[in-house]
Image (cartoon, rainbow, N blue to C red):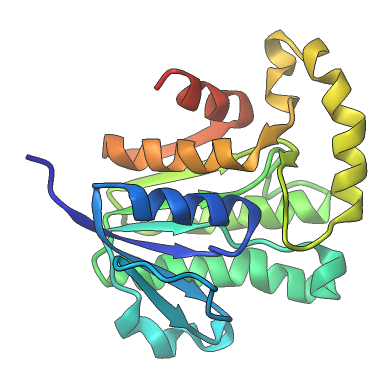
Length: 223
């Protein structure tokens, strides 16, 4: 009989996070789902425990950040963040602090959305930040760490991102041409990433795993 566990999700208002939160609440795997965010979500569910926190003072909320499986879908854009410094804070500092605190509180698995091209040594700021995040998360003593590197994310967002909308319009018609080694560049639905994250958690495989976009799609297609 499978143990019933507790899940914690940070970033449940975003594209991937919104789908993932819904999946976690429906899953028999979890008896409780803790959603951590700046604002309360317009959602009521008997399994849902919403924790409104100030991410700049995350350590003050450590007692509330206790769960078996940690799902992190935090992320922003430089335009929305307003500066490179604020972008770094959201996409690196908040994520790595969450990993550090929850590992110390006994979490077993950490699953996080990164990005295709993540590389701590990259000359491109966005890729460098994502790569540094991955590097630092992997220093934490979880039994399992799953890093997801989706290509361009498709789906309806609450916030409008004009650059990504334009890229989506350009890339969608070209998807059929991206075969073989190019498959990892295919745009992918946010819901697909969410389903892959839950699927990975259910395997309970120990170790550190990096999932490129084509593998993310395959993880869902094979279920």
